[in-house]
Length: 368
Image (tube, rainbow, N blue to C red; front, side):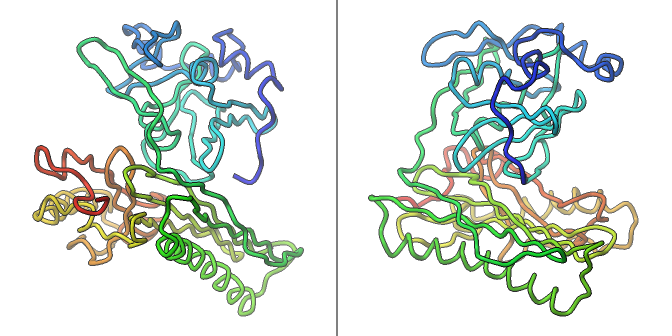
């Protein structure tokens, strides 16, 4: 996301959606679906925070628990602002921010410009809601769901005692090319200095590779002021607990063609020694995880190809691209690897309960 949203209160529309006042665009009112009207009529979800039951309530839509953004602002103290010109909400602060495009009832969400599947927010009866999973994965909030009582209990996550800062590589932009290449760097008094250096080196090297590739494309291409080249990236911290850090790096390049190209790469580290973890390290408690994933991914990947002539899925790579969130492990494939460009980046999330035996824990032996 290239623009920071304005302070909360800068637009009456924002106040309407977050407080429940019916300040709703006509297009939304006319397009409200039966599905969303039904959701409003469902029994509300009780929300507890710091041992207290909030006056605002959540809802459930198609099995997904949604939390009102107003509750995050008013009760949890999470910053919320609105850019009326861009029709975009910003939720959160620090290294992870949610950006919510609210132009329709199915509001799109990204984290620092990184879109992922199953991240849709919703506007219901004039209020903006986001999935509970987004709180757990990106906003540092633990959420426990009690289905019998229809209650979600929220609490602050116990994050690793580290500081994450954003760095930008120096590069000269002009009318024919623009660069904005960033990368995270970590620090902390409890970190092993060698481990800190090892992790920071990997993340900086990724960014340097993006910049070098961009400069090579500029040197070999024919950028113009009418169709300038563009190279930028951003990152999100997907997991920052239990001595483990998982980072999503997303890179974008445009070189004058019909569309740009986006690449997404996950990096997962042990903070104890700086080791970059492979999928086998995360799922060590299940020596048979590959058998399950290969069979399930074959069905899912082959189904999305639509007879376009792409290669069929065979098996996970030895260095399979993935990242980790509180929701589990997300397997990532490249654009065009198995599906048309229009599909986007194929990624599939599996909960730890799906991947590990009962009682098995992820990162076995890594955080000891």
